[in-house]
Length: 376
Image 1 (cartoon, rainbow, N blue to C red):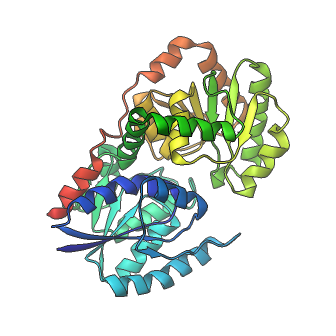
Image 2: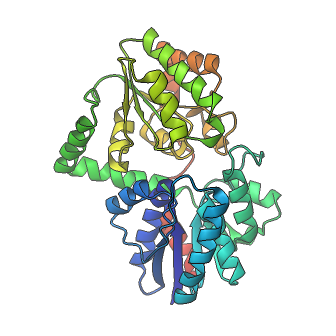
Image 3: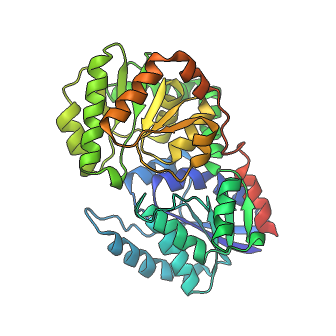
């Protein structure tokens, strides 16, 4: 029996690893699976653990206010060392591009334990955009033994960096598995839907049956002037389109919250709320007109729901979505954000074209593929 330690620390990792954990735990004859969370994000992580009923075997609990990334790395290395000694896994399974991902991979490597990398091979080609995610995923690829790439393009990125082709597996992206689980859960459970709507109303947003644009923004590269531009753009668009609502669940980071509250709190058709749990957020994505974001995962999720996405970043590690027509890059330039949002509001033909584009990121069977591949 193989011993697998799944390590993650943030809300997006938890969402994408939850269906993988579920599949591995179904295969009790093949795997002893344990879960370790670093709690790089504490509150937002715990929400996802509760939704997917994941009970971590190890909780490093490293979250501290205003800590630096080098402090996070050192804490994970020190605390994970004892976990690896206790469990002695055959494989450490990590996801994506966080500091947790890189640190866990390094900790495993130092113990000569093999590493499997879920969502491997995403690249922008710029080490500082996004920062530090691009560096984290490239460093993890150097240390990993098995690379679960979501698309052919991500596989080619790994091949171009000299990764052995026999160690690369195209699986799709497990975020589509997680999304389908939640969408089907809401569809099949009327009480859950009622409770979700009740919780959304409690946040202060009661217009989820109206025509609204869902907004998220939290990337480090947008801190400062970028966030200023984004907020000014939203204010201009809201005032120009009083019949459109803008819903903005604001990230907990003060670099995001301050400009949002300073510039947007008095705009009547912009609703600023606290971050939603994943079930509520999926429900709101489903009912939105389109999504304006700087997130990575939403670029993968929203197209499965038939929702156009405008990405407030200059570069993306997910060019497949742009090529398929589901996503457009608009950067953090005020004039471009305004132009592209207004275009989607005014041009219904263009809107429909983006709605009907095919999602390149998977069919909801990624986690099963990974579990089967690991048997060999």
